[in-house]
Length: 356
Image (cartoon, rainbow, N blue to C red; front, side, top):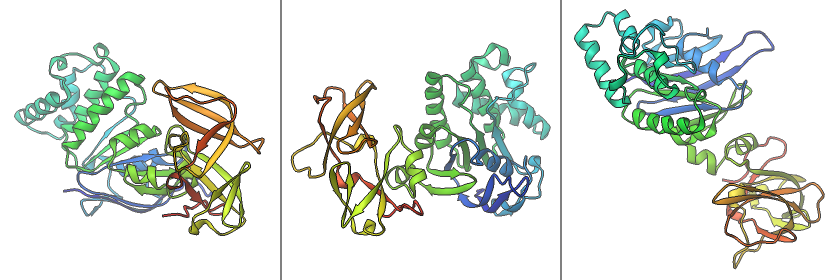
């Protein structure tokens, strides 16, 4: 099949504007890679270089062992789904899906067979005679996906295809995408700024910041073991609690409370502590790392409450905890436990992860 390989990929518009810096990664057959990061991190530029829509400044793009870097987009056998659908308004759904196949001079029978197969998967059979103006946003996105599927490309590229949909429809189409691409053998590269899409759709996630690859791993590994402070703060909703704390021998002070340091974090005068709000809990028997504070904000999330606590002994230390909605606690002098196995430690200078 057609493994996608990016080797030392760099894109520079000028000496000071370099959106992608020395990126190397591989996407194998049956893999779904999501490029995720904040606006301006280079993810869409990477996708456009794979597609041939942006010229590569340095490095190579290979598909199936063939260097396609100098090739035009039409010679790379890729299919791209855009944020804006890019459908022909005067054509029916059938003709939109068939347009690329007709340009490749496929026979009528082959075209019909491919469209029939894709339309069944996408639930487009009743819509084949309609035009885009007669379709909802979700239906238009399915047509755009269908046009990509019928091409049977070596690589699928998707550039924020769900961003124009409302929240409910986005959830539905996301589930459809998951099922559709689990049946595809070609590598998939998906660009989004939405970490929920990245975590739910992907077999691998590449987290980017300022053009650099910060971490490439399975979604669960990125959530459980973020490589550095940036990844820890970017992946996860609500955001991880991150605090720079002074070291006192083999512990740190969090307000007026001591937190024991693991061996790997016992160096330097300070260290960054990270813990996700969903891992902060009300104390249980045997908990030894307890902090106290006063609640100043409660955000009701349905099954849970996101509670913001100003810790005792510190004017500016705020700890957020995700607590069950039916739990009982006091707004004043609330006690919270920080399980040692749920705490992440990062170096202050390099911001790299300190613990395995």
